[in-house]
Length: 212
Image 1 (tube, rainbow, N blue to C red):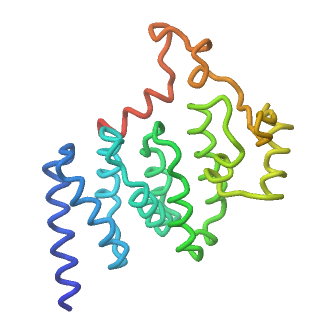
Image 2 (cartoon, rainbow, N blue to C red):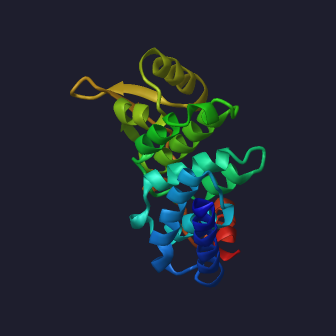
């Protein structure tokens, strides 16, 4: 009973922070601690977690990939509610190279992950999207870590990408495989349009959650 009262007290305090200080980065530590509380107490607050992810958008250097992974796992537990998609949408795209920690966290909750059809494919697709915004070429080892595929499974995955999505596999001087991703206006300055010409719809839609 004492544990339940303490959990209720913490939840109420966080609700007040979210209600009156939603855009104040000073509440980041409290929201991060609350994510850990949700894991240990088996509770859940989508509003608080979305608030934290919005703050990470403004302060990506403060983002904890472990906390993000826990938020996504908790969101999975709310299926079939669209919580997972809402959370994934708010993860800063410019933050790369932190997928390993997410996969490690997901591995601790295999029973949840395996119960959600398409979960791994969704994360792999997001990882590829983020990498393609930044790189024209990436080492095979970096890709393997980001999408959590290795060995023969990775070989088959790459064969499919080469056949269907314009990927190219080449050898570097050190004989390590390099994956050449299709050029786009984000990873190739030569293709970047004049900012005055157009604003991608994707950029506009990403503003709405911040303003809501």
